[in-house]
Length: 242
Ligand SMILES: [Zn+2]
Image: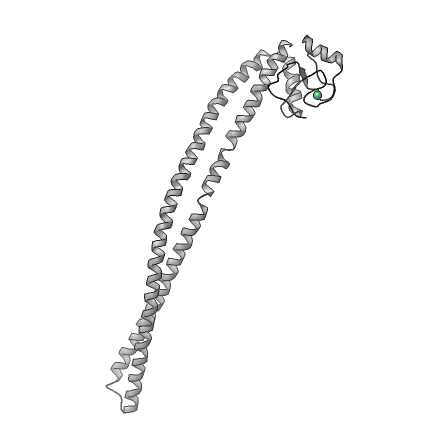
């Protein structure tokens, strides 16, 4: 193989690895957001429960206000009992007082129902809060794992970039600029393996004398069809797809 092409092949591998690890690192914010979103269902259940508790409390307050009103009326009526002139008026007041007392008992029953509801809701709230704590702990550990993985990726990337720099400096500038130019419009893959039959990137046939040139490795040969730099290696580390 042409010595410059051999270096390019190593550079190509490193470049692709750098691309790969950069892609993984860039995914981290999305990964973390997806983990956070796992809590949404439970957070919504918690919010709904709290709203129901608040609603129950305000209903209860309203009912208690009703009782106060009825009791105030009755105490007024009781005061009037001594002032009434006729038996009929007296009975009418007693009837009114009795009616209000029955109303008060009905409202008290409703308040009891609300108190039972409130108790059930608070139990449910505790369950949801416990569930949320567990889920949060799980998400937190998953986030830590994702961050640790990215930290490892960053270390690998730093080493790859160091190699990339050394390799880049080792390649002849003219060859390097050809490599960069081809890579730009070939999704970062500027090299292609040649076989007896064809270029393994674009699958177009290679003329026999070009194949011989690639095998000889005395000059840099590019594919007539896709312009990639051709190399000869029976077991290729990767294949570019066209
Ligand atoms: Zn080709």
